Amino acid sequence: MIEVYVKPGICGLKSRISAHSSDMMHADLSIESDCPAILNLAREIKTVDGTKEIFAPFGMSTVFQQARLVLSHAACPVPTAVLKAVEVACGFAIPADAEIRINRSA
Image (cartoon, rainbow, N blue to C red; front, side):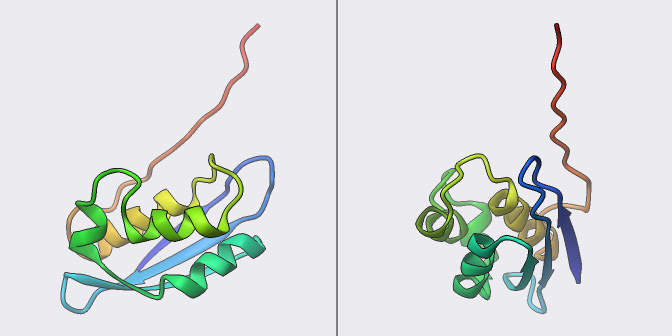
């Protein structure tokens, strides 16, 4: 099982994504979040086809299509984190942290 933890930024609404694949093609997802919109997303994407999700053109995966329907903040990093969890759970990538760091310069 793969677990991905997301601290999204100023909203402070953390999420935890669990992904498991028993056949290295499909991923069963469990998403816990402090964000009501992410919980709506979680209800829509319980199991996904990893191959279709990871190799879909950018923005065309089921995860992004569903996120588009329930999220109002385009910069939310959670849908990408879901895809990273699927990617690792299905064996398309090894586990490695992704990071967004924001610094303000004078």
